[in-house]
Length: 553
Image (cartoon, rainbow, N blue to C red; front, side, top):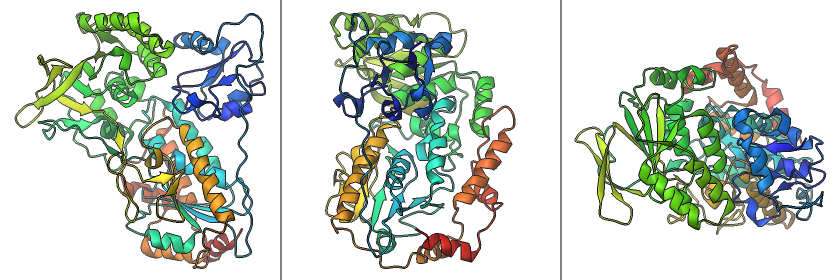
């Protein structure tokens, strides 16, 4: 009974280290790990011990006997990653070594203290790596009253298994030496220089919070947005809760065909009663119940073999939704199948070849994948009426009527005050996480490497940064903080009286879960004042307890 990795894989890699027989690949020591769409269990080498099941933070691994009908394809998909063999042979590569956490050499002046700006996956993995050492202190600063970044606000609400990684982050936040400073905006309430006075090092893990913008005429019309903003609106992010969203149109066009584009298309065509059992925001659910959308067209500039979405996402989509192609796009798929040699891409093409015909009558909300369409301009006077495309590589123009246009062409980092910034690739210039020309300052995650990889990819990215940070500390390159440990808490509370600590976040979390009742995992607050009101119900630590917290090792 081999175990199988399914579409909710986050590429965290913990399962690789838990496996006693090295049957999960690609492993972090292999070149393909950083770009892998998912990991794969070797059915020949698997000994069915189940160690990987408990290690997986998102519940993506199941015995093959417990797979649902829509998951059976993953049995073959996992097996296809490995060569055909006669009998039971050893695993296909050397055992992936468990990377030892960097050893911190203690100093007489006090423990290594690090400020982490941001609280998404890269930030939490970095904190976890640091806290494997005794005496290290990590202070995490987040501008919202709630932590965990895109896991909370960027993962589609119908992907609840992926959101389970927050349970891992909660365990990290509960470790000795970890402190949350939520609702604190570094750059507004505190400066980099002030953080440096209280820490040996400052690590920015702020992600890539903005979208790449499509520079064509009409993108300022009412009814244009980005898919990322739409997902944030669906998830109830407080900065996007008031986004004007009009779903009275029958057709929505999404330009770009990555996983975020599929997320929006899937949510817009999902039965609202099914979404009502998730943590979708109340305002989004109300709008979706009144939606008139009948078709979402996901338009890509290139052909089917260059599809940006991952195979697991496509499998999951076709298991639950009606997805169609035009006859012309079906021909493109067949043409690509003749020449494509990459196994993963061939799997995508073979699945695309089985999709329905777009010429069939629309009987329920559906998704149409469209290829070789280069956006020319958005049509309309005051509001969106459609999109004009050129057929890629030609002068032929095609117009598609639509009442909403969303772009989904990638995330983009933004400049950070007092740090260098490379506008061409939208990252902070760095060498293994060390910020160029700025001693004692580090980066991890998307602001370090660009918006690539999956949630778990940030684990190895953060580990690299932390190894270099600790090496610098051990080499005496990081100067000791000039301020007393207890001074940080007073500084933060003086600048931001509405700071939310771990107890406040626990109160918000508990209140949201209670609001969700028996049918929903949670009913999220979408306004900062409501979050702060919930946080205020937490027990307030005494001044003495706060001082002890600042002084303890």
